[in-house]
Length: 282
Image 1 (tube, rainbow, N blue to C red):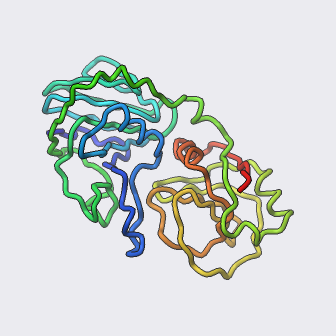
Image 2: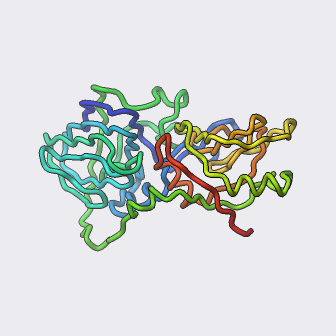
């Protein structure tokens, strides 16, 4: 059992997502930062479960009511097990009664807390990922208790020596391939899109909205499939980048598609951060 003493700013449970239900209008969900999610599961394999806590800005305070192990990847938070500071990308053992406190973020935006075991929560459409109203709530809440079955394996965690550089979160460059509507744009607009430095205006699990001085003369387009990483160009000239909980279809110009590495880099950036695109050859 894991008891939520404090839920933090926005903490959800995510697994690899709902990949087979987009035709029903259901987003994929799952982790925002796939690289950090995969790293957590490499460092601490979960047998039949890849579920993690995804923590944003301020992490949760949890009472651990069993014996098991955990690892934290992604953004660096001011984190403690009881009163002892803990590091990212390192597997820790804990015993029943200890308190795990993930405080404020120090580098990046989102971290991934992986326990060695299985959360006893139902799968909905073959996933435990939080997405309201598919799931009953948007995030975990103070006072909730989550059934947890510890499945500690006899693994020497030191064998796996992987980590994601903190510097990757500060890189401005987002690498992308041309999107399906790239060739609708004039050469002049293409050059402006690649040369401009954007500022992140707002962000959530649905997408990132960038400030832009661009103009878009295309208004009437057929709705088509939207996937995480698609860069959309709105009639008002805004740039929107779809992320984990994005809508499944949309009618905006789809001008670019971020690489998976660049998408993981983007979702570790808070509002006010600057980014720019670099176009890759097909």
